[in-house]
Image 1 (cartoon, helix red, strand yellow):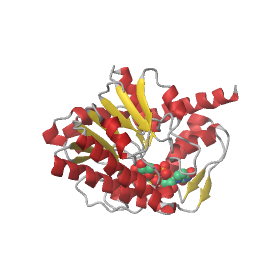
Image 2 (cartoon, helix red, strand yellow):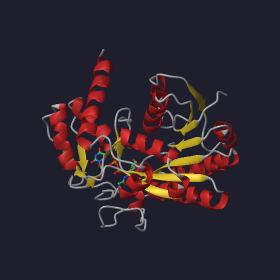
Image 3 (tube, protein in one colour):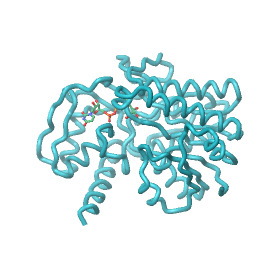
Image 4 (cartoon, protein in one colour):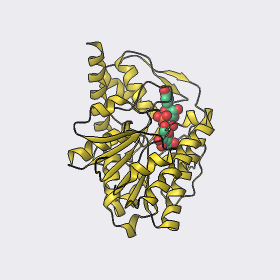
Length: 320
Ligand code: UD1
């Protein structure tokens, strides 16, 4: 195995592959694992640079030990990242998102890595009416996915407390951007809407469309991960930070913006509200600003423009 400073789990996924691209750009040595359950081989092929890749499952402890050997930082992005999927299959969600995370932590501990940074989820907050959400609020997860992701945070903190393994949990708020998979019924809403509207297909808004989200462009999440690796341990180890933009938009507003960007002139279908959904989501990002030095670099509108541009190219490429 080639030497590497960073291990990315879920490297073939949307966020994992974007992280890998940025690390390679910075001249870092990157190793990655993926079981291709939701990841995509094309995301790896697009990386311009050498990665040390292994096809492996989080549940394979020996493979995780091998993957962790010699690395300084583990960026744990691998997951089954879906609220509705977890509602249908809570056992599968728990197996990957909880058991898989514990396996990885044991491997990272035994390999004596410097730090593990974890893709946690804003869904931990649930439907608490207080906005914005800040990290010292009592979590109130609704879906099995949210419970699993929150459990992962607790394991992160536990491994710091019990074994001194430095961990940082980043609560992602609806990350979107190029390479997010639009093709599954469980795909994130922006990937779905953008591809549907570019193809002239009518998107479906679940519920009245007045639900809001702190949609966060992927480059901001990448930046937060890299900052989380290097921030002083005494300020961040064992802790949890929101990663978002600190602004929210409703689905109806988003749909209007997308009509402008995609030239889709039709309307949206309104369907039933989705089970396990939360109504509003907005982050207080001051803790990440203070301890990680995090500031969102790309705002929602700019992120949306870049994302639409990327999907437009993909769709044009598919036609040729
Ligand atoms: C949730 C979590 C997020 C997590 C993500 C993983 C919250 C606030 N966020 O996102 O941290 O990473 O799951 O998947 O809990 N929608 C439609 N039409 C569609 C698809 C979705 O109207 O075709 C609606 C949904 O009902 C929802 C909103 O769009 O109200 C956003 O949905 P989605 O993109 O799936 O993300 P969340 O469930 O908010």
